[in-house]
Image (tube, rainbow, N blue to C red; front, side):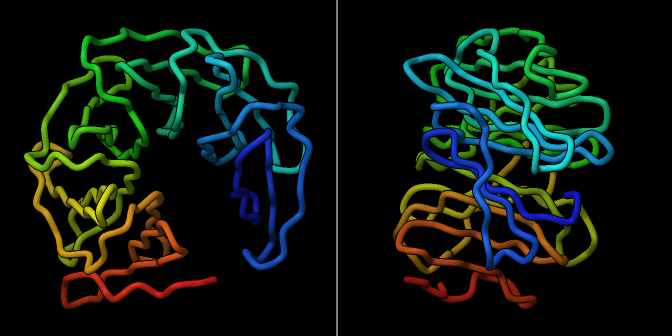
Length: 239
């Protein structure tokens, strides 16, 4: 967003780049490990993370200048944040969810904390539904970021990342990744899932949908992409 790439990490790390090759550190003012970031067109970036069992949120209109971070409500070790038109949604462990219209640190509302014990690790929006990937092979889904439905995918491996894009027929496709090279796909808004062969056994930590292609990244620097004919290509590894 805003013509730049932005990534986050340990000790409040924020890096920006115009080309994904040359990176510049920015001052978040936080000591927390930042675990999630999202972009909202016309609003800007929101990033979140945690330190000493307290979750923190910071925001920026342009990726360059960041607000002073504030502790979040709920303090549920929030790990991921995503945006749908009119609403930011952040998710954490034990079913913790919070939402905001602006993404600013002081604007969040605590939503219902559900009884499931799985950690919520990552979320994506399809245009009509949020789907959140969890430990234990489960997902939770919601049309509004407020009321959530717990679903087991049928596959017990921990899920750590998720993205939404289009399948070969132009339909909505969610792709989730996780431990042991797990790749799961759903073409019905996260209700039913099928396992795919990633060809690797290492953990997948990130997924994105860019230029009509899903990309998965994981341990040992592996990057996976699915070819047009189906399946997932062998990983390209960067040292």
